[in-house]
Amino acid sequence: MPPPATFSSSTAAFLGGMKSALASVFFLVLAGTYIGMGALAHDFGFSPWWLALSTVLVWAAPAQVILISALGADSALIEAAIAVTLSAIRLFPMVVALLPLLRGEGTRLRDLLLPTHFTSVSMWVESIRLLPGVPRERRIAFCNGLAVGYMSTAASFGFVGYYLAAELPPLFAGALLFLTPLSFLLSTARNAKAMMDKLALVLGLLLGTILTATNVQLDLLWTGIGGGTLAYIVHRLREAAA
Image (cartoon, rainbow, N blue to C red; front, side, top):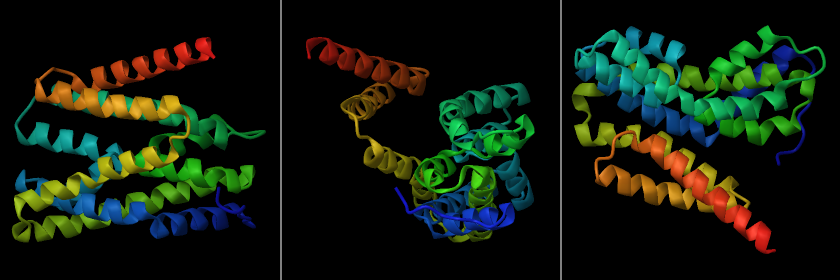
């Protein structure tokens, strides 16, 4: 756990969050990812300002890839909306895990709306790591600053990628988009302490590979349900045998 941080005001905590975002490895991850995202938007005929607005409103790289690909392929708006919504459901457990760290005495519902919207893989991983060292009354401001730092990075490098699109090989642009899931995988592996967590990660990787190779529909959903359930069953069997 990082050493405790003290902030004299909410503004100082917000700026501290932004500083932490710009100093973290996720700054580089998001920079690379959104260079690829900018190139993708360019290839599908979307403007860089459209990409920046979708970053603020959607705020999740996988969901943005789905949105750009669906609209670029002339899919119906309702289909694109459903696909983006289903993609965003994966963030719900992260929100549930994050909110207890943010709530304090007198915390109002409206105070939690921005952190809820801001929750993404990068913001969640760093919040779980850093918030225990931040005074509870400053955590919401710190968390918002962290998220704004990441969102600003994403929006800025989206412009860079858009104007570099003509120079980026398609394979390289696609590889950049893979940085976010790769960083999440490495962060999850680092933070997995219990055997059940490690087993769920390994089973998820195996099942995901098998289901994708066999063209099973909703492979991500079945991977999560199957890997998590099997890991839980093994955990309970070990507890019963102990």
